Length: 459
Length: 173
Image 1 (spheres, each protein chain N blue to C red):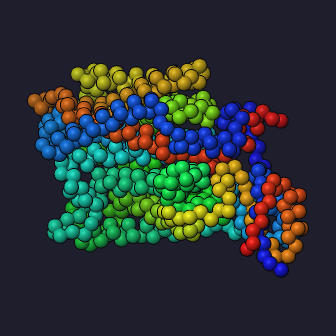
Image 2 (image 1 turned 30 degrees about the horizontal axis):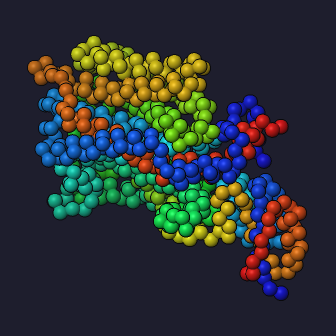
Image 3 (image 1 turned 90 degrees about the vertical axis):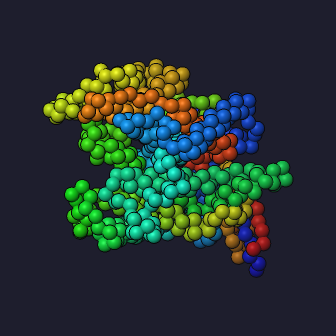
């Protein structure tokens, strides 16, 4: 039997048995939703509906409904897109990269982090779709044989790479998620009584694909998970690298930077982990999973945030240095304008939230506090949104011709669509938290005797 | 003599693992083991062959890469070559660097999806499939060992009992 060092803190608290884990994970699915769930759900749904109305208005009247102008012709839509895609990165990092590194603490959080990834990428994908203006022509972005005179997509373009990267990332994440869900759906199916809730029993039988937990199936399951993790790991890094190339391959000062791919990937992991913390700190309370999502898990995530946050800070400073060192006047001005121009406040928010905030995690007391982590994670979410806003809008709003210089102000439609995607995201996440096994219980059971508090304390 | 199926139920995966080794050493064949989570070392203890899922993923990945390259070659080089930004698309190998991201995505797309489909087919899993586990507790906290006995039933039962089964059920098979 495997052994774990005794100085490692237990990952499952409260002297659980296998059956306790089953009960705890099945409880939210079997029970009724509490008051807080309904309040949160109604709020999210209202935001979502408002967002749908704003999207409908955009499609009906055109992109002119947004605050865009001739100089700033790319603003909140792409900011939101990159922000959501970035949030989507932590899920696969937790489930794939941490699996390859055999990090056991991933098991309590990977299911929800992957759910967050899938829901986050869904929000992100909405933005290019709406920005097309005529979303019913969205199939133009795929290389399909057609009758328009051999009109093909351009495989040299980072925008097409993005189409491939995001659709591959989305579908592979869904597959990875579902392969892990099958045994857990089977656990819920086997607990449901056919007499009390025949519909639910049928639903979970359908979803569990007839899983029975045979030895050969588990052997294949483990290998498939490992290979999927191996495939998903370079995929995570490729997706945000390609998103960054949408900017980096252009010649706009402030975008034309070779540091963009690693800088964007780190920023994505940084913001993704912050969002995972925001969600999990709420979720562990709302569906009573305090024994499984412990302060140790939060601390491990905070360490990753500290690392990626410091690297993001380093990237900011490298960018500043390189713009000065380049000797290109336009490049130098773009960065000077970011920090001291009319958008200095956005730059200040970005610097404070992304560079200073994570440094607080050097302090053990802050790193191991739920309240502090929750507040700081919100700061990081805000900071990372402003990072994208700063990169996109401040690089555009003062271009080569001073007569064209202008400012960007969002219209109510811009704001409505952004809030709508937040509403949509939380609607999906709340529905998920009541119908899915929110923790990968099968995997978690396999570490109970290694990392459970009862077994750890027993000598 | 009639055939009987024995279901030995265990509470702990380590006991089951030791039991499986001992039962096989005594030349009794274990038909199947059902468990709520993967047990490390069980495949070796039961004498299962190594799975070839990873090999299939490699083959599917190669297929994805080739199909991706073929698609790009036909679209960008053969069907409608264009000169984009002073970089003409006359030959595949000159333009290959720009195609790498999509070639990579095609490889991953094919490998991940086709391997997962192969896994589901090989395990007989499909939407709405029926579980054939003899005891629903095997997805919760019990480990079940299925043995088909043709000869000495009492000896097999005693063997299960001795190696730690907490419950033994039998069925005509």
